[in-house]
Amino acid sequence: MAEKVVSFTRMDEGTYEDYQMLASLEHEYCDGTADRILGQLEGQGRESLTGYKINRLEHGLQSAARAEYDGADIDWIVAALIHDIGDGLSPQNHDRMAAEIIRPYVREEVSWVVEKHGIFQMKYYGHHYGWDADKRDEFRDSPYWQSCADFCERWDQMSFDPDYPMPPLSHFEPMLREVFSRKAWDETHLKPGVVVGLPEDRHPR
Image (cartoon, rainbow, N blue to C red; front, side, top):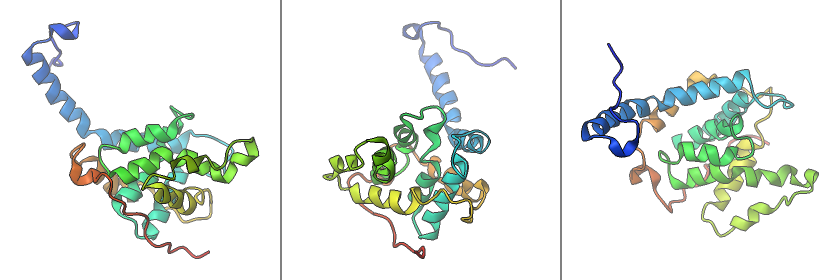
C-alpha cells in the first residue's frame, strides 16, 4: 500500500485534506515519543562522553535510582533519568535540550531544574576551569532554586559511582512511558508556580 503524502510542494498550497492527513500522522508519531527517548538512552550506553568511571546511560540510571530510593515522585524520577539525554547532540547546551524534551509533560518546577542543572553543577568544578562556580546565584529569586540545588547535590553530582546499584533501563521504562503519554501542555501536570521540592534524603552519608 502506497504511503500517504500531501499534494503540495510548498506549505501555502496545502489543502484542508492535506493538513487533516498530516495531523493524523503527527498524532501517531507523537505516540512514539517514549520509544525514541528509550532509543536515545540506550545509545548512551554504547557511545557517550568518555573519561568518567561510568557512561551517560549509567549516570542517568544511577540518578534516577537515587531519586526513586528517596521516594521521589514520577516527575523527578523520569527527569533524573533523562536529564543528560542532550549530551550527544548538544553537549554545549545539553541541559536546555533535555528540558525542552520533558517540558510539555511535567510540572514547571521539574523542567526548570533540568534546564538549569548544568549551571548549578558548576558549583562542584567551575573553579578548576577559572569559571564562576557561584553562577547559580543569579537565579536565587526563582522559587525553584532550592529544588535545583538539591537535585544536583543529592542525585546528579553523586551519580558517577560504578559500585552504586543501578537497575536496568527496563525498570524505569513504565514510568517514562507514563510521563510521555500525558497530554502535552496540560496544566494538570504543568502546575506552574507549584514547589514540591525533593523528598527527604534517605541515603546514608
